[in-house]
Amino acid sequence: MADLNTIKYDDVVTSLRDLSRIREGFEAVSGQLGHSGAVMMMLGPFMFALDTAAYQSLTHTVEYKWADLERIGNRPMSQFTGIGKETVEMPGVIYPHYKGGLHQVQAMRELAGLGKPLPMVDGTGKIWGEWVIEQVQETLRVLVKNGAPLKIEFSLNLKYYSRENASTVANKIGALL
Image (cartoon, rainbow, N blue to C red):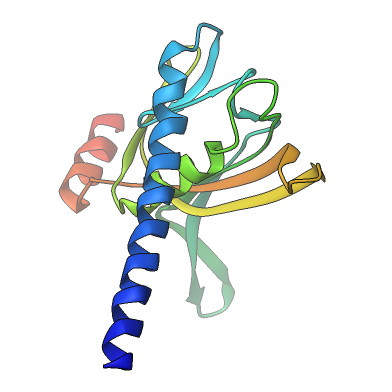
């Protein structure tokens, strides 16, 4: 009988922790709806802005694949084999007591946990396409007596989600020629 009570207690604790986590993420995203400042970037429903979660820099990396073809009596010749992985890294900072609240990074984690590609659009109107969240990192700084941070540093790593197949890519290349 003791094992059954322990299981029930553990299940209740786990359920409460999960509900709290989901509530925090929902509150963070819904709290952004009243935001009136300029938007730096939208990733799905999540808004990056100076008075919420502001990224300090954005590093956009695209790999281009080249294969070396060995040739007898000559140097190897390189052949373009396609576009590789495309990533974005966004380190930033949140001052939760100023604006944005304590749960902005939790909202990022909730979006990542959905396991779905998210549309990304920047503040200039550029549509970046669909991206998946690969990693969310959080560092709490300047802690007050109850453990709440006055500063939260975060880093978000994204990877481009391509819906293109080989024929779509071939058609794009053919259009260029």
